[in-house]
Length: 460
Image (spheres, rainbow, N blue to C red):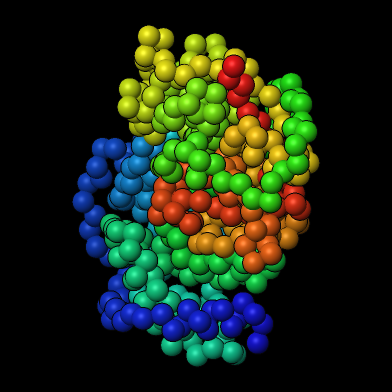
C-alpha cells in the first residue's frame, strides 16, 4: 500500500461517533424566505459572473436566494444558494429543438474585501437534482482510488467523525444542510490533499486537520495569502553588507526578548504588514533596548502604495513608515483587519526607521546576519501551509517553487532538530495554527523561496 494510503488508514483510528444520516429531500422543494438585504449585492454579483459572455437573450435571472455571512476583520465571506431561471431557447442556430425555460440551483461563495466582490466558487445544476445526505454518494466520487483498497462505509464513517471533531474544535457553524455537506466534501478532499503533501514532503512535517480545512484552495489563497509578492516590478532596495562573523550553530531571538507574541491577521491579506512590523520590532529592540508591539493597522490605513487586505510589499511598507514619520504601538492604533481612514499621529509614534535594506540570498549569510542583527522579513511560497501542523517542512522544489512566493513572514531563528536544519518562522495566523503560531522550514536548500526576498529596516 502506498505511504499516503497507509496514512489515511491512520485517520480511521481517530475516536468519534458518526452522526446518523438525515432524510433526503429534493432541492428547491421548500419555500424560501425573502433574502436578507445584505445578500442581494453579492447575489447580483454572482448573477453577473454567471451571465458573463452570454448574449442578451440567453441571460439567466435571479429567482430566489438564501445564504449565510461569515465576517472576520474587514473581510466578508458570503455562501449563497440561489435559483436562477434561464430563458427558453427558440433559436434554431443555437438549439435544434425548442427548449423550455430552465431553472437551476446554484451554490456561490463570494468574498468581499474593501468593497470589492470576488467569486470563489460556482456550482450549478438543474433544480430537480436530488440533494441527499447518503454518505456513500458523497464520498464515492471523491475517492475512486480507495474503492478497491478500503471499505467505503467504514471510511465514510471515520471521515464524518473527523469532520465532526473539526467542527467542534474550531466552533464552525453552517447555515444549511447543503452548506454543511459541501464544506464536508471540501474537508474530505483536503484530507486527501494533505496526505499527498505528507507523502511527498522530505522533512519531518506533519500535515492534516487545521482551522483552514473546510476552505477550498481558492478561498484560502484569496483570503489569507498575498498575490502581489509575485510581481516582477518590486522596488529594489540597497543591498546590505554581509556580516563577517560566521553564523553560530543555532540562534533564537525569542529567547533573547526581541520577538512579540504571535498575532492574527484574520480574513485579510495583510501578511506583508505583520512581516515588516515584526522586523521593525526586533530592530528597535536591538538598537534601543525596548520591545514594543507595533501597529499593522497603521500600515493598512496609511500606506497608500500597498493595497491593505488585498496585499502589499515589504519594500513599500518600509518607505511608508519613513514617509509617515514612524509607527504607533498596537495599543494606540489597534488592529481591525480592514482598511480604515488613516489616523496616524506623529506625536504618538514610538518607533522610527532610517532606511531599509535587501539581504543576501545565501542562507549561511542570512543566518549570520540574523544572529548578529535581528529577525528578518522574508517571503515564501505557502505551499502546504493550509494543512501544516508541526515539524520541519521540506516540500519538493517543483511543488514549492521559489518563483511563486505568496506569503510574507518573519525569520526569528534557526537550528537543527535530529540533524535536520531549520528556519524558525513567525507566522501571522494566530497561535491555533502550526506550532503555536510558528512554522519550521528546511534551511540550506532555498526551500519555498525563503531566501529570495529577505529584507530589514535600518534603525540608527
